[in-house]
Image (tube, rainbow, N blue to C red):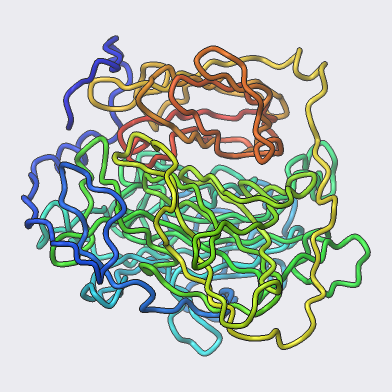
Length: 615
């Protein structure tokens, strides 16, 4: 652990100790390993983006050696009625090996019997597995990653698959934990990172707490988190795919609350950063009548945005590699390990070939710690323009035209539309990151020309005419009324450094105790405060989206940027900043969390449990 700094809070808070102290104490006894000397950069190779003094840079890599698939294949459904295990049910099926979760909320409302019947939900099966031959780049050796693994229609492994879902159609995902329980026993502290228990969080679906991936709900065959009743081999997650406002509006809720670009990732208590860095994350794309996923949709209400296969998700991670090209991570350090190689969909400096037409690109910063400012440039580094349509999975009311940059903190998403028809065949474009960052505390200055992380090649005409469009109006926004704002309870949450770790309201995470209990159906204003001048915190609140009412920097109110004026689930607190967020808590009860999504901060206790209860 690093020593206390002048910004640390020192007030005693013995009532809340860091979560699961015994597991963390065990890791501390493993010690650390001195890394090999840094490699020498050459003009032929692309260098690391930053050099962190405590670690040598990753070895250089030759760019543009591997291509991403031209089309993202969605995960195929699984017949859970035909397998050796019984079909899903409302109660945990512990006799069949399911971990001891709570009963699925609203099961009887959506399904006709205690056990699921054929045709009542779309069914998927995923396994978390250790993949031993992943290649991040041809200059690096094949190596270990952890992935969500499904199956294609042909039965081949489908790694970190994208799930396509629709509002009004429930999904059940059966998640198996097949990680080796002796993981790390034959590795150094920096190469053996991660813990082989899992808890899957679908960020930011409106859903019941027992399927939300609460950090204390981690499980393996022999271990269980403090908030589960029993360990298990698998867990059934129920995603009803309803809009928020189910109780208020009936039906499947308020369509103004629709989400689009979601992602699922590991959320294991104390180990979210190393487990997610290992590779356990993927996309979940949610469609409805408006955002139908069909650019040829004849429904006059449909937006007809660019659709699959021209709807392409891109996940960005910052990783660091030792002198042998092996991925490393220091899970003992409360400031973690800042990656100097930007991995895009599992590859370093890949190429994506595109047709001459419009594409919807969904960008996700999956962490663990790096912030980005992306620009699209041509070969001469001239900035290109695009249309910005969604932030954090939520459509803006109107598209932002002629945009030139995308700013992302960890867990933020941005949907943009790029029209590649304006470029000649053979044109090469690059997505570059111009945001400097030299430690995990937060970003520094913007500096051109930046680091190229993804290359686009316009290499073909589309197979059919491009009929997609970007309408001038996307989705209505339900803003709180003045009366609702005046009536809302205000809660103050302060995010601070404390005793070499990270705290909320001067206390550490305790998964067994709710700091507050909120009445279901109520609305509150959460006042989020970062009084430090040295750190940035992207704050994620589970269960609900929020609307930013005000932002302040150094005590002065500042305008809310245009791309943050819709609903959000990640609220970026820069140094000496504060924001007031209006949130409705609806439809489900149980345990949820708020935390910093700089994942090393949440692992070192910058997280708080809140419960939602009946009146």
